Amino acid sequence: MGFQQGLSGLNISSKSLEVIGNNVANANTYGFKSARAEFADMYAASLGGAGNNGIGIGARIANVAQQFTQGNVSTTANNLDLAINGDGFFQVQRWDEVAGSGALAPAGEVLYTRNGQFKVDSSGYITNNQDRKVLGVGNQPIQLNLNGGSAEPTQMITAQVNLNAAEETDAAFSTTANDWYSFTTTQTLYDVSGEPIPLQYYFRKSGTDSWEVFAYVGDTALPAEGQPAVTIEFDPATSLPLSMTDADGNAVADFRNVPFPTIPGGTSSATQSELTFNIDFSDLTQFAGKSNVNALMQDGFPKGEFSSFNVDATGAILVRYTNGQTVTEGQLVLARFANAQGLQPMGGNEWAVTAASGTAQIDAPGSGRFGFIQGGALEESNVDLTGELVNMIVAQRSYQANAQTIKTEDQVLQTLVNLR
Image (cartoon, rainbow, N blue to C red; front, side, top):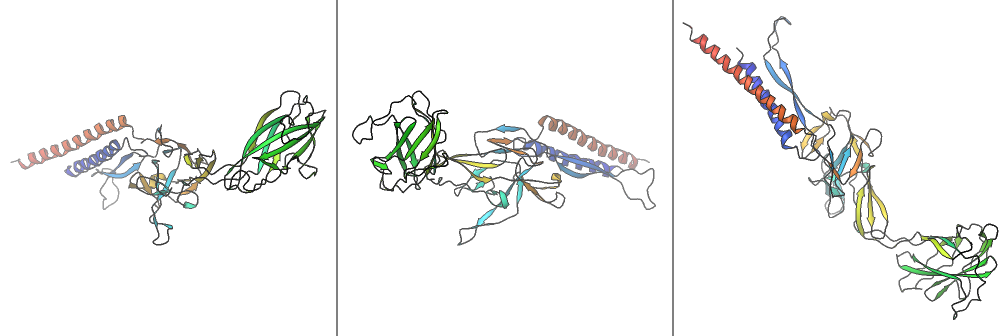
């Protein structure tokens, strides 16, 4: 009788509805991958070998296959919401503090996820909603510096200044008169502690095609009162520097690396440290027209506080500080598998490696066959609700048909029992 076939049909239809129901329930779960029930028929083994008239004894669930197709990417307002556009998984792992040491140690296996809803904990570690830490290069947890960026002293200045070739020769240097120079400008430098130092330049035309550069920090002259920091001779044919001498009267061979007098500590404040730097005067010009500064740049900066961060397409985590500096504080890596369908689902949008999946291949986003990272975005589930609702109807009809098979078999059996 066909009770077994009908019963197996009811069973697989029920399991199929469970899979469909799970897909529908997670239609709005970020990083979720849908699954489908795959069926196989069943035959009883015959003692004498295969025959041509074998009748199946029903169906069974052969596999619940995960579908690792790309989900839609939607943007968010959170810079730590990350979406993978292409192949790959984020690596996450639980790490606990080792008692008495303050260090962290792995406390569980590495799991893999497509859900990029990440947070930053109080120690600066990037974590997911299961409190697992996101791993970077070397399978180490990624930790951001939330305490602020360090200061850097000025080491090089780049000065792009035009000095008026038509300027009359200035009067001799004077500490009382203000007509001894043709042009002045100010620039802020930074010492090793990040203390700002206002440096005042005075450009004095000392003769035809000849200029002297005097420098002051507050009332302190560099290197000494009345002594120019740099002397410059221009080539009248090109209006570009022809020769330079430093404060000690030594000829300067490289106009891009002109030694400048050392700024002594405490010149502008009690905490200021001594500062030694060079200046690039190679783009100095002497053309007719108003003296002006085209660019006056320096490479120092004060200590900055944590401002914001974002993750670029290659997984580099860029942290911005209030001093204008952007620093790469970490590097995300992705994992991919030869057979992603072989991964074991662990719940929480996480998977574990198995023998069927193969070992994880690790690399930076965008490398080889790895996908790219999109910051401020999340990957939606790949559940097709329309398709799932249609599948639900099909599974329901299959369940009803198998129930009808059992009902019919019951009626046939009842008729046979009632024969006289």
